[in-house]
Image 1: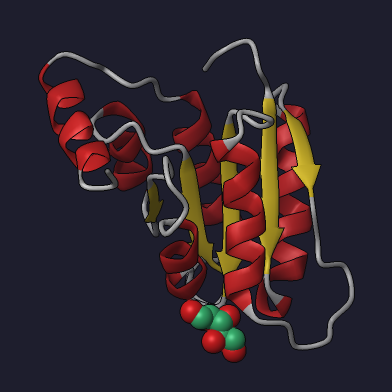
Image 2 (image 1 turned 180 degrees about the horizontal axis):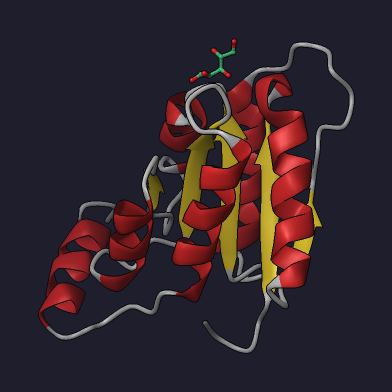
Length: 149
Ligand code: RB5
């Protein structure tokens, strides 16, 4: 990753506890979690939280983002509507590594009702420690960006 070690975190109500566990895990890995909530358990729509986290990444304030909802799917869809965001839902470590290495993903989405805490931490580690490989993959990522134009 770059010198910017800030990683934005957000979720809906379904994933508050797992998000807070991810924040603690990121500190042990040497990253600076930027947890933008929410912190209270009331039902809250995932699109606004996915978009808010995505804006932090798209603006360059944070190098990466990790977002969570019940399945990881809805909040991922919202984040991917923000220009410059490439976010994937992962339930395994192989995919988490590959979306960085091949797709230059800048956000990871997790489903708190899908993965347990232990696996989630391994997925997070795989995602934040992997590096984009560039080369032929850069051409393909550029093609994704072109779709936003
Ligand atoms: C909330 O009940 C749930 O729909 C949400 O967390 C998420 O799974 C949507 O994709």
